[in-house]
Image (cartoon, rainbow, N blue to C red; front, side, top):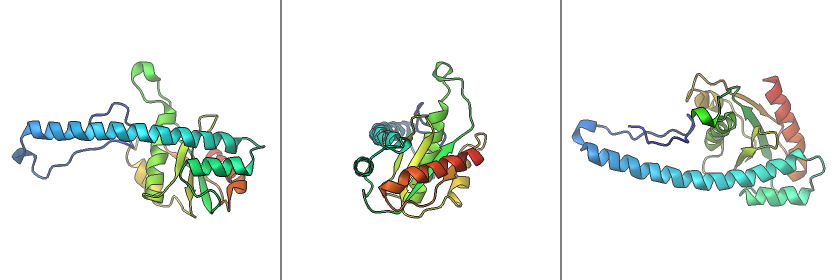
Length: 193
């Protein structure tokens, strides 16, 4: 049974699985699904606040004159260790073009951010990570540690096979001063994908 959430991307959909649905009263299933839907909405509000902090980090990284102390503070605001690398920078896009909010379609940025957030959740687990958008609306993530997308990207792409996912990664960044260079490499990798 799907958990209703019109704002969820294909990468954020959740389902209530019941081993024997005929044994459970339908009203109970709908009530449980409604409770899970409210939990999902609260989680989406928390995630939106985290994405805003990540967007601020992305704006700093996209500037060529960003100070290391400002980048370290933005990393800390995102819950990442401010001076302890390595960090991996990942950029992504879907190549999908939607008709826009007027026709009920999801914006490409929301799709990309949802896909990248799902991939990062597999990479970082419960640990900290920053997922947001750069000033040009490209989705990006900063993940602590020398992670790779091997196997994870295909798993996330399987959530919605009709939407092509493209990603780029930069070399591991040793600290805040190296993140802008890693972002440049990740953007190059994305364009080359």
